Image (cartoon, rainbow, N blue to C red; front, side, top):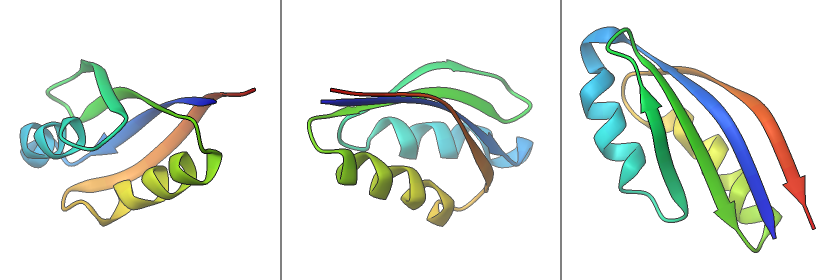
Length: 75
């Protein structure tokens, strides 16, 4: 099991669209959002590679500027 917590930074004008797209992804939960473009999310999945691929995939979403991994737990 792997749980990752991170902050996604997006362009303010694209924040709502980014939140919608991120929330629709498998194993991803949006916990908080800010109209200035910050999202606090977790990725929770049994496979670590899935979590890594999901996090890297955030960069392909239109409007995402950067991501910052805050916490990772692997069992």
